[in-house]
Length: 337
Ligand code: NDP
Image 1: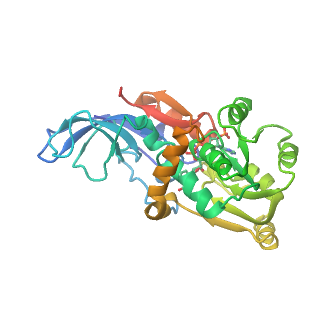
Image 2 (image 1 turned 30 degrees about the vertical axis):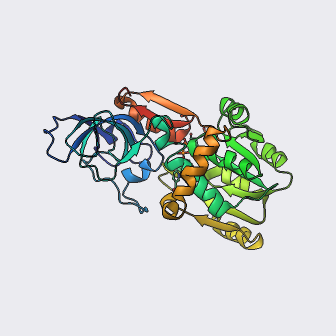
Image 3 (image 1 turned 30 degrees about the horizontal axis):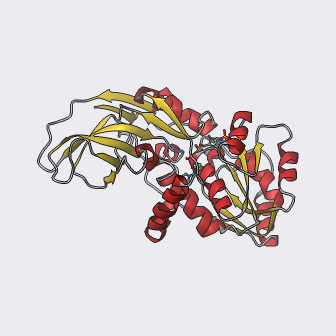
């Protein structure tokens, strides 16, 4: 098995010294065990938090350990009564090519129902993040305006499309003209903006003539600063992620903006509510599977995948994820399915 371990905690952007590749011989299976071959490793922004020992909602990966991550696997060998060779499974086996499991925490996948890669994308954790955060906290009403950035990614693209299913108007923000076009052509956003455009502030103002009722916060940074200028009375702000800040090593320049922001929260009676998706799993996980599978089947929610071949390319692909070089749900293809 080839494994990618955390060699040292990164400062700022993770570089090659962050990672250590190792190849080990796996032991023979014991009774009740199975051997998983990883087909797809999901790369997600939260992994930057696990590399660091700064305060977080989850414990960091220990230095020397295999990096964490969700994977889509195929059973290669089995001495487990419930699993046969060739079965597909969602696992949390991390950045490695193979893993031995006793079946704990595995979820069986049916390739006849949906491509297995969607289990870590639109029909998996990122899709659920969009669904739960938007519907439980954002609560978009027909005719309202919903704004989301990182809008071609798995979370943002689902947010914009689910908003439209609810009858709301969706405004997507992404980096670069190709992504902006995809928001319109592939995902059907009502309006699409490029946050790197020199006229972004004016373009945003023109895109939200009736103000913003829901800002689904994925990015923070300069985008959020502009968006908050247009929030309406009683706007809802599900705080999902702040990817613009994940590699940050010091506080931003300039004056303290907290008093101004809190004043806005007060004056506009905003609901600003952070969440980690798994808080909603027990109450809304089943509804998600039902609704999202249906919306995907009906073409109401489309998804895009960015597949990078080879575990050896995961470090570079992960750097790209935090800086916008991915275009869709980022997957590492570790082996053939
Ligand atoms: P994406 O595939 O959307 O990747 C992140 C994207 O963020 C990049 O592609 C880039 O897109 C954008 N980005 C990076 N830096 C900036 C910046 N400075 N300003 C604006 N945009 C930037 O990732 P996901 O869809 O997987 O995740 C989206 C967000 O959701 C992240 O913040 C993530 O941490 C969060 N999340 C939270 C969960 C929770 O439970 N709270 C669960 C899952 C995800 P572009 O090129 O368009 O700028």
